Length: 360
Ligand code: FA5
Image (tube, rainbow, N blue to C red; front, side):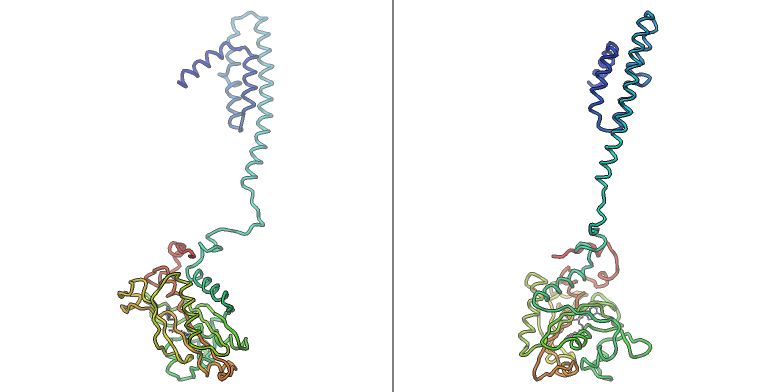
C-alpha cells in the first residue's frame, strides 16, 4: 500500500510545475517539528534526486526559451527554499535547546531526595528506622532523647551504676579496656543514665539510644558492636506499674499486633527489683531456633526499679524520688520485627540486604 502510494507520488511529482512544488514545500515546512525533519525535507526537495533536479534534467530537449524560463524559475524557488530551510533549522535549534534546558533544568536550591543517600526512610538502616520510631513514641510521651560518648570511664560504666571495683558483676559484660586501664568502650547504654542524672534535677524522663561494645564471641544473636536503647524515668511515687505501662506501650506501638511477652526476675546491680522482659521468638514462633538458643524466648528488654545507690550516686534522694530504667536490645528488636534470623546480616554492610527495609 505504502509502496504504491509512493510510486504514485513519484509519478505526480513528474507533472507538477515548479510553482506547485514550491507551494507543497511551503506547506510541509509549516509542519516541521524538529531539525531531523527539516533536513529530510531539504534533501527530498533540493537533493540530487529531488523533483527540481528532475525538472532541470528534463529540460535538455526543450526549446531554449522554455529552458531559460523554467530553469530560472526553478533556481529562484530553490534559493528561496534553501533560505527557508536555513532559517527553519536555526529556529528549531533554538527551540530544541530551550526545551532541553527546561527538561533538564536543575533547581540547586532543592533538598536532595536521592534515596540511596539515606535521606528518607527507604534508604535508612533498619536499626535507624526502629530507633527513630521508638524515639518518636517516647517523645510523644514527654521523654527527652539523650546521647552519650562511646569512650567512657570506669565511673560512668560501672561504679556510678552500683558496680564497684572487684564486684563480680563486672564480668557479666566482657569489656574492651584501653591500655590505660581507666577508659573503656561502653558496654551498655546505662552510662547515659549517669550522664542524665548529672545533667538533670528530678523529675525527668529520657531515652538514650546508641552503639555498645562487648568483647564477645559472635553468633546468630550476639554481635561485638550492637545497639541498645536506654530509658530512665525519675519522679515522686514511681512504681513497677509505671514501668510495665511504658514497656507495654512501647511493644504495642512497635509491633502493632499482639506479641507474647513474659516478665521474670532478672539481676542487674543497678536495679532492684530487676526484670527480664522476653518476647516469644518470632523467628520460630516459640518452637526453638538458633536465635533463641532453642528456648523459644528472646531476651529483649531488661528493666527494673532504679537502685537507691544509683540515685544517690546521681545526687538524688531515694527517699524522695523513685525511678525505673530499661535497656532495650535494639538489634534483637529489629530481628523480631523484620524476622531476620541472624544478627550478623544486620551489620555486614551489604546494601542489597540493608536497602530492603521500610518503616511500617
Ligand atoms: C544490660 O546491658 C543492662 N544495661 C540493661 C538494663 C538497663 C537493665 C537498665 C536494667 C535497667 P544486658 O547485658 O542483658 O543488660 O543487655 C541488654 C540487652 O541487649 C539484651 O537483652 C539483649 O537484647 C541485648 N544484647 C546483649 N548482648 C548482646 C549482643 N552481644 N549482641 C546483641 N544484642 C545483645
